[in-house]
Length: 111
Image 1 (tube, rainbow, N blue to C red):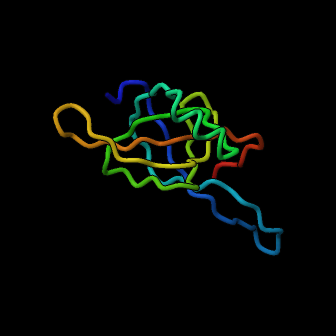
Image 2 (cartoon, rainbow, N blue to C red):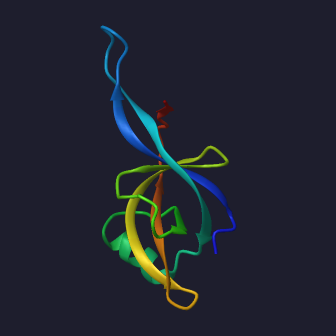
């Protein structure tokens, strides 16, 4: 179920050196295993109707603290913003969380 690899969840925080200009950086919250999912036509159609896009859909353990507007970095270094989260039931009533991810065009520095 979570056999694709590891992802790291980050929060966006402001960081500034003494007397320097504030800069937004990604601050690590946690790392967990994930499973990549296929984006269905219904979900993709709904996203386009809302002038949104979905670049990736991943499933993580339910108890992981991931909320919309957190950020995800995969093992390949690609950065995504969490657009939505949803609870799903899998394998005889076990719960998991699905994250709808949107790829970032401008990458953040990682603290």
